[in-house]
Amino acid sequence: MDQTELGELLFSAQGRLSRTPFLVAAVILLAIALVERALPSVLHWLTGWVVYPALFYVGACVLSKRLHDRGRSGWLAALVLFALVIVWPLPRTFLDFPFSLVVLWATVELGAMGSEQGANRYGPNPLRPAFA
Image 1: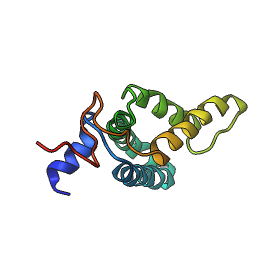
Image 2: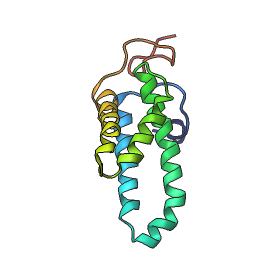
Image 3: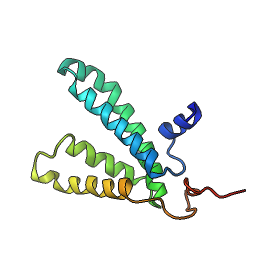
């Protein structure tokens, strides 16, 4: 993967993204969030102002492309990210239950299910691009 492809993966919400690159990006983003959360409280508070907005933006881009690949609107990424923020790192109250369901739905929909067959309104299938 060259620098252009990496930049496209992390900083653009356009197009489609197949399951494997999505899962790799998701694991990396979650690992960064876990490492940042494990920092001592003062350092966590200081670095969180930079790390979390960056993770939120990159997460929105990656989620949007994966949602596009499943034929869904990228705006659903806002709901998924909001639910993830509410239940992170673990649900604490019964009121977190609906948000946990959203995270569970996103995990199954985006992490377990394959690409929508053929081209859709967001572009060609990333696994089987159309030949020119």
